[in-house]
Image (cartoon, rainbow, N blue to C red):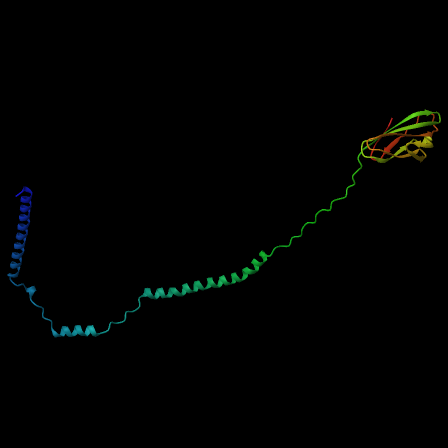
Length: 232
């Protein structure tokens, strides 16, 4: 027999031997308890008939109603306060809901706005461009007369022009005959010249006049529409 098998056999004998010893000890302890003197506590109890009758009567008697505890009545009294507090909240919500539509409809209604009238553009008269340049001078002068020479320069489109000349009233200037390249009219020291000039062109005009002064006479004022006039 191998060593391993020998060890297993010895272990099995020890286990079985221990179990047998414990079993024998239990059997001996039971035998000792069974053979001992009887105690007073082991005697059977005798129940008297009166006790049995009273027990049966108590079993048949219905239990007395238990009075309601104070805590239960307090809890019942609390419930009305809860229902009362709930009722006003619902009632107060209803009027506020009925009043809201008027305010909401007023706010939702768009306000009428009057559009500001657009300002009417004012009509402005565009002044003619200063395309004309007039230069006045005396080409000849003698004791009772003179010759006026006028140079008209146009830097714009072709146009008609009007030149107004004013002489001193004591000079006694009067136009004699017609002018050249221009129409001449006037009296009492006022002379008007009308004519035309092409685009980007220069024209020389003039006229002859008499005077009462022996000195050289020149206009005191000179003007032309759409340009400037100078006297030299």
